[in-house]
Picture (cartoon, rainbow, N blue to C red):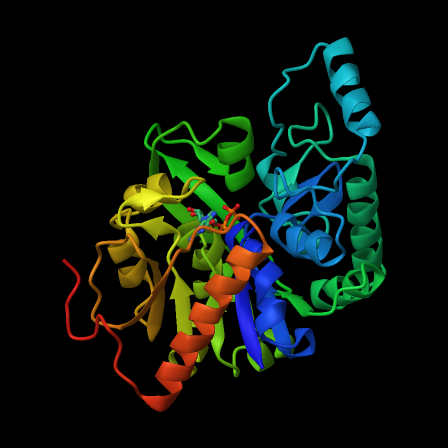
Length: 344
Ligand code: GDP
């Protein structure tokens, strides 16, 4: 058995090859929910959905979100109506009182449907409506995710990181507080980041599904350590569970070159070095790392090297095999090629 921690791009890419290395029935995936938003009353879970759509073979693999070939009729009409009633076209975060009203899972991430700022496809929206409907019938996010996973024919086990609300909020240097999606989608990661908050995390609980998954060896695929893994680590008990099981992490950097996305800016904004060395410092519980052949970083932990760029399932399989080797070495207490050399 093996458990993968997933954001919305790197681990889903890796999973394409992981199921060639491990039996799909032995694979669990725990997905970040800090990025989730409620738009017009419908809960959108971007990282859960990327794994769901990839496993169901309907993912748009150009963007790594949404359903391939989906139409956007409803989204287009929402935008048109907003223009028609001449409202500000940006994200409309509901007022403070509304943020804690309504369904608890949507706390601190509630946006109006007016002028919908994230492009939600029509079939994609049907998933959000179904999810929200099942939540309103009284099921937990874990149960709902399992139901959707069955509907999409997933052969791996998929769970959200918690059934409680944890909202990733970006505090900017200008003193604004933005939900992560507003920062990333609407502002395109522009305002300099002063701090990142995981609101609700201290009160969030580990679910039985996550507790069980974290009892197995864990692979952290290439991920944004701040906004994909950070929310998980902020849930009490999560990091302790990782300290007690073998953990291997794939770097989302080659040295200080990030592959994609906002990881470097967010790490710099939260005081971490935006590099492989900074990722290693963020994961003190990790026993081993998979680094790119060209990554000059030397770590004081077990290191497996390969070409870590993942463009297709063969690449993903190569990186997954490096993860498997790293876990086997951790298991046997073996020394790695980079062991004993401290991060420079
Ligand atoms: P998000 O939810 O989309 O922000 O993304 P993740 O948390 O999944 O993070 C993706 C991270 O993976 C980014 O920091 C990228 O630098 C990294 N990444 C993207 N593609 C690749 C790849 O092909 N190989 C590796 N090693 N990292 C990648």
